[in-house]
Length: 510
Image 1 (tube, rainbow, N blue to C red):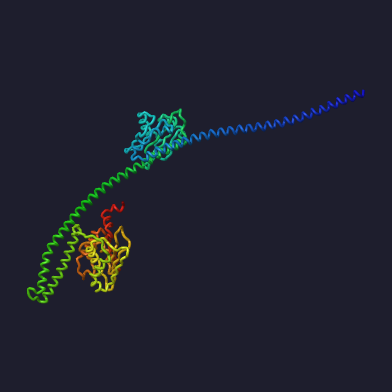
Image 2: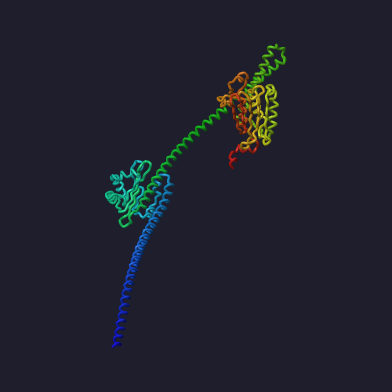
């Protein structure tokens, strides 16, 4: 009995243990299930997040591909536009501008219908380019455009019309007029306002136009307007240039005729002076001869009063001979008949000869004569006899107008002007009025001052000096300030090469 009870107790205990274990297992399994459910929910949320991210990536990739295609299309369109713009900018007139627009440009832009028109000189729209339209249809479009009021107002600004920005009413009118579902209409604007338009379009099956297309066509229309402006400006400049060339040619012809007349007059003047001078020499020689015979008493004694008058006759005859000789020399030099004997001469030798010759006049007024000769300039290529006459004339003038104990300076510059020596003769005399400077080298001109009124002269010395310097292909000019002295400048060749290069100036630029 006790054994049975013990056995029963053990069974009950075992059952209780099994029950407790089962309860424990159930409780643990519920926690596991709950934990697994939570994990499953987390995985589900992660899966949904991944799904959303995948969708976002796909959408982004599609958008990027679309943007890339749009950018590629825009870049391709801009490259094609750049090529066409270069061609248009090279055109010289409006007709040529439109001839340089190739229909293949619009194939690159994927437009099957194109109509470009601009106003002619009579302000009438003319078709400049037509792609995809029969000619009668294109001409009908031009006539109809003038009846569309909203298009007449469009040129007030630079806005364009397209199938994506137009009002429904305007869009329907343009679709009906141009028979295209997708389109862009842009005015051609210049400084004179609206002068035409650019229309591009596609049918229903083609892709719709984009903002990039609008921008491209707007740039294209603007480029047409700019090219037309440039062509008109070029044409205006070209016409002005032609008119200027005609005026220059006409003026050149007039100047050539005037120069020919001047040369003819100059030659007649030189011939006249030579003839008159020769005619005067013979009687002057006789007058001087008879005066000399009478003064020598070869035909009898002459009273002192008569001798005094004969001396005046002799003196005035000498002055007149000098005048005639100067006139002859000027005429010969101007006509090229005076033969120049060019050679290299020491400048010092020429200035010494001149100073010795004029020393009595210089000493009489106690004038200080300074001669500045740099070592770099020793020789000049001249006719020494003629150049001595230039120095004598300039120094004689300086002596005449320089007061007692004044200073006269002869200077040879150390720098050369294209192989020509620069020489100056300066004095501390009374100077020359500004209004007289421009006439100083004219024949028979004498400055109106007290000294000239008291000292007789011919007014030919400076003219002779100028012609001698010009015969050496040099230049001569004067600077003076009244009351502060005068300086005469002139240039002479320093070598045979310098003289030859002046005869052939192109050598200087070879």
